Length: 64
Image 1 (spheres, rainbow, N blue to C red):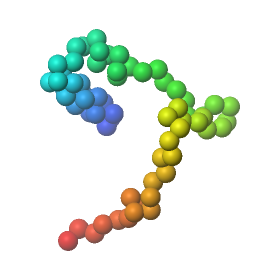
Image 2 (cartoon, one colour):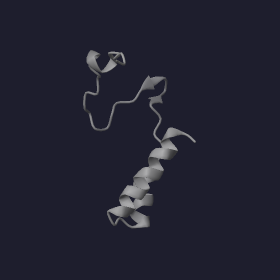
Image 3 (cartoon, rainbow, N blue to C red):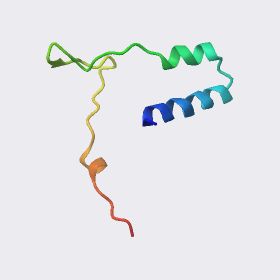
Image 4 (cartoon, rainbow, N blue to C red):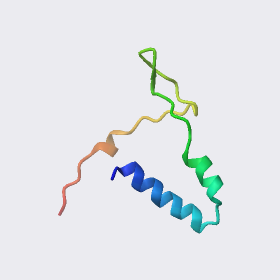
């Protein structure tokens, strides 16, 4: 099973526990697909935020 499927199942059960209706869950989880590239160029993000990761997030940690 793909990770996204696992995530959606867990998210669905979390929302049900909070009392969200099935119709509202469907609306939240079935958003239209938007490709990252249009005409060979990356689309701008709708939220406009800068989502660059810092170098520290790529650091490997050794298990002790």
